[in-house]
Image (spheres, rainbow, N blue to C red):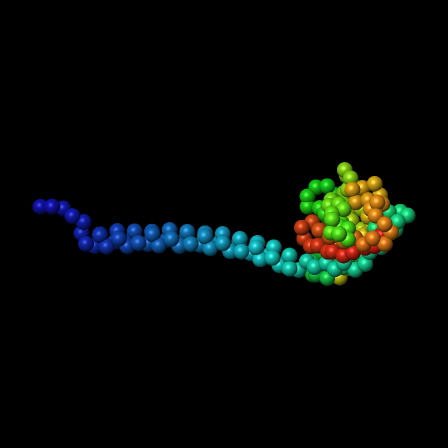
Length: 174
């Protein structure tokens, strides 16, 4: 006489295995869904921040005597934009091109190793508030961005990149 598992015990064991498999699949699905959702939320926040950040170049004046460039940028978006002039990242970069689109300089505003010194309008805790027209004053004298060699009346193009959050571009005349 052979002994075997009774059909009732076999059904109970099969049900327990099915329930254990379903529970494992459920917890795996919940974990995957949670990870995907948090990644999507972070992506949406980054996209929203980039879409919400908008700047407009308003005006610029260059003083040949002091070699100071003063320009105004308006925050037309709905998030504040940092105007950081420190050497640590993220920081503010800019590029100046002459009328022939040749790069005059491409540098930070930290006043270190040839970069121009931001006199006013930027700093470690400075922000361009929503709706604000912000004034910047940059000293170009003796920096990589010095434009003494150019003629009075020459036109220059400027692009300013604020901490990877937003950018503005415009022109000024020497």
